[in-house]
Image 1 (cartoon, rainbow, N blue to C red):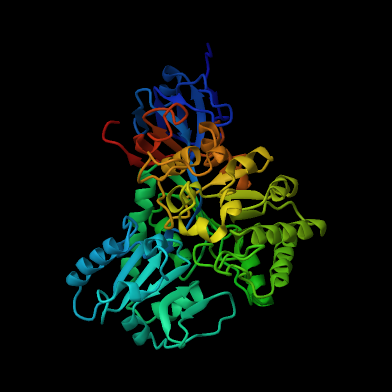
Image 2 (image 1 turned 120 degrees about the vertical axis):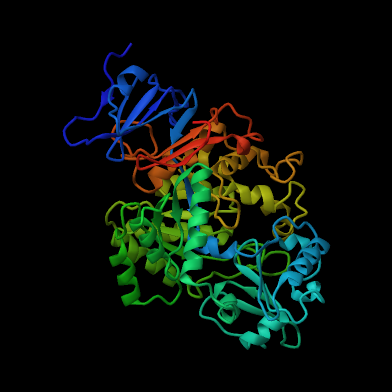
Length: 553
């Protein structure tokens, strides 16, 4: 039996601010419990591990002491891909994600219209294109419910939107437009908009005509979303945008002590980015506050399969998804090379097989130029052939995956929109988490919130069962690509830390590591995958301070 706690050198560790007792401390590397039953926190770090008696003795009257009563402590769970500010905005309004058919959508819209003040805009989100069945995704299918009502309905992928005729009229959008990137105002044979807007550049044409929320409203929505994430067990997230004033909002919350997540933010680099703008992105790296910083750059290589804007090696069943998001893919390659030489990690949205291949080719070319070690990432990776898998490990590229997209937006029998567009061969290689893992890639898990729900236990569960969360009795999509319970936990702890080059300070329960911790009622390794989303989160600790505490503790 250990007689003394493992501890930091007492010099400079500061007062013991938090003590957790009667704990089961789970090591996400081995999957075993540590021999210790308690830990102490000083200065935001784990300062000591040991038995209850020894660790309790480190507390003083000002220390917060919590008896966990045998609960399980894991390193803080980190979402590898989410959009906090954008999500807080997009999820304000009518939630259409539960609607399984057009009649349900029409009924939900009709109820919302009855509540609207005259002239007010209707905002909806989470619309599943599968509700349209075989008919075109256009606002004509929602008439007459939206007649005369300015409405913007986000499809679940957040890369496409339906705008009602009145919204298009108010925005002055009455025909096709030309964009500097892969975006489209979809029009019929006569040149009249159908209401479907593909990608941000097209959607923004109409969005800017709608009333904009105040700063106070945006701040309030963001705070509510982040608090919900902390209550779900998240201690951090890799935020994949820095749109508008999002960085200012993070700074404001951080300064006020209201930021309950540790955020690593990657601003966007869009097609057409010039030398000065690229230099600004490079100069922005490392800036931030106590709990957030700008680290990395987000790029897009394609859109989504569901709306026909992915980049596939062969067209989808509608002859779509044939082009890169960057009109000149070589320009993307040059940008990646410049960022690499500057030591800036990139995170590339690449869903289709051609997009993933081009992103890997670009990283390979960048690596050949030398420079500092950089951990580049590819986000989403929804369908790739077998000859692509091994390249992730060979090039050191992180595979950032969102398994709940497979669970909730596709079907095992391939009758969903995503699968029909791809055809059997490509749909059968959906979200190859197991294939990437076994090939040696570092797989990081995330939600892509607001595209899918952010609770991390649901993300880990989806990686294991690959079934629709709305009906777990349905068969899994590609069960051979499932991860084990331990691998799913690693995807949101040690692997997330590795992706951020923080393995020396995060992702483990160890002396000297950050005191970012998630406390669960039982071990996620022994809880059935289908039960995991309901496992109670009893305590969330960020930088040594509780951000969520269940009444039972």
